[in-house]
Image (cartoon, rainbow, N blue to C red; front, side, top):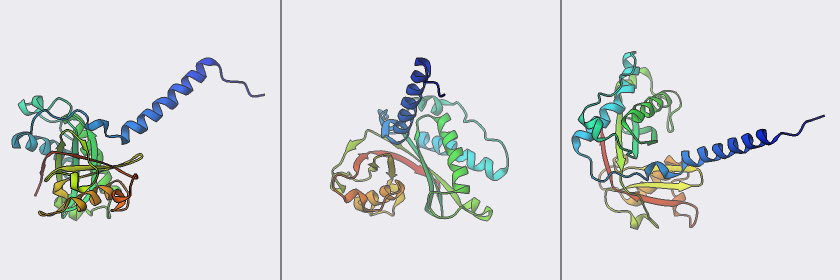
Length: 220
């Protein structure tokens, strides 16, 4: 005869489901981008973030442990929460992208997971061969305050975009497209990164669009 769950078990089950729901929403909603930096980042600071993001890939290629970032002045200046995006590319094509990264130490962990994903099951295309590993390039971007946009006409020049549909989220960066790109194409890229059709953002009421100034740097 089945026994009914006691109050303690029911409470634990409720809390577990609540935490699971919170985790799902936190992992897909743009809460990670709410703590925008108060200023634009310098080239030195962006280069430091790029070096941190590059380290896991270099360690994989060289068969050595990952080194933690040096805690220098740039580390201290960037220790506050920053909404960061790290991208791994092969010959200019995006293999994988990660966000929800907010501090340099978290950046190295996110880049490590991203490198592993790109080498096994990338978001787009096939995994790179060992011969192609030296051609893998890393890019880092830091988003600023996000604002809602009705369509591509409300996205400013050089801004990053975020396309949201339910639990799906995609980030589009200026470095994703050649110079002279249209915001229409950037939103289509963000839709693809969210696992949607490129023009899904055009359907009324289906997607939310957010735009942000962005500081970015990528390996060439």
